[in-house]
Length: 334
Ligand code: NAP
Image (cartoon, rainbow, N blue to C red):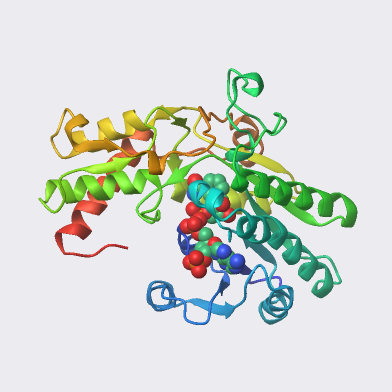
């Protein structure tokens, strides 16, 4: 490992944040390795084409020896753990898989680091989430959740992430690892998976504009989230690992908006002021327990990391709709 050129290992390279982070680290001159799972991952080809500078290593968070191998091969100075079963609704249907990948998978990775990195030089980032807070009235600070707020996860995903969060803190305290947790509030963009509500909306809006679809089916419309742009958030992840000391940081916009507000702006982008005739509510998309409202207070990240989000809520909706109209016009969906 040289001091002049940094090397990063990114898990979840095929996901939304993995793509944004790979771009950012490439601009900064890093050597980049990415973990890809599965015998025949359909995303391999597109990942290789989009990020030719990333060396892919086959591994799985649920296979400890594959992680040891990945750390040995890459010899990274920084590891960003972005891999997870990350969809809240899916986690209710696959709770054990979620616990094993999103929760215990992080323990597997931390152990792999401990085994390989005997000099304790690797810096580690864990992708924690606002879903750990749960959004209930009793634990909701007026100005938004901070790093010190009480956790009350409301889904198997949130519970698994809370284990991952605490095991990361535990390894920091027990083994003096430079391990940081970014407690990130929702962040979206043109790389968001179409299974997530924001992208589901912008994708459908684009298709409605082009006459390819006439309505969209959604679950509850009242939940509120603190939505930012993923490109801004990966900058915060990187900044955490450049600090002398590890820590936990909330990344958020400090604003909260409902799904209805998202629909409002997205449909206005295609000239439709009343979205109600185009939206049907389907109980299949409603969750056994919902998170009412998430709002983050990013003061610590702003002060200590000098981080702030650049894209605001209308700007986010606009860029997502614009992108989806463009790709749907030529018949592509990513
Ligand atoms: P994403 O698009 O769903 O990507 C998840 C990634 O994890 C994919 O690359 C997926 O690989 C990989 N993965 C899943 N199971 C795996 C396993 N067993 N072994 C190895 N890789 C596995 O998620 P994202 O939006 O980029 O989010 C990145 C991280 O931040 C996730 O941990 C997420 O939970 C967390 N987070 C996200 C948000 C947000 O709003 N986006 C907010 C807070 C926290 P495949 O492509 O092979 O499925």
